[in-house]
Length: 233
Image (cartoon, helix red, strand yellow):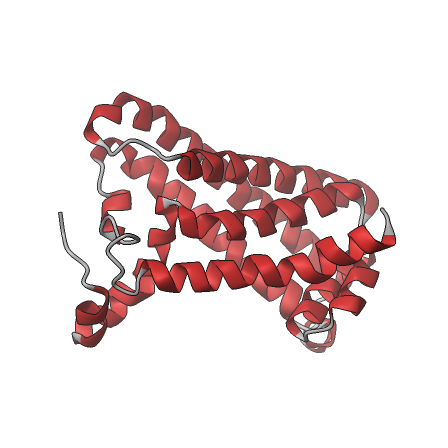
């Protein structure tokens, strides 16, 4: 990949997508009437979608937590508690594979049952369709990277550039991050680019209502509920 393109995609695009994800999510739940169309609970309120929604959200939340812990925890911390590179890679493959499969099954159930109840729901926007396609692609790419890792990274050392890339992004070192990305295989790069694109698109879809989960929990105290004006429908 061209050095300039590599720097743009893996050094600066993460900040663009993350900024839009955070800012867009904040604006969506900041009481602006042109953003806020429905309650967060409405996303999971359709009866036929219950099983698929539960599987999808359980799988996705497990994947998000696993990625955050696996990528942002310094490798020295794993070594300090006796987790070798190989063991960490095996855990990532097993847990990630199971969670990805569960999420994919859940999403398929949601799409299948959602089509039968289309008359009861608001019409999906282009953004809603796009985010579903991107998530399907992301889950497929994720499962593909596991197969690659099993074949090529039995020792787990090959996964280190991913950790260094993510930690460099958090440390505001885009140049170093782009350099580590050079060592990452193509299928993993596709997975990373698609994941960042999901963050970019999500604020413009109904899936932004996932922001409502912590707000609703905090809203039990009253302040957040007044600020975000959640309603049950």
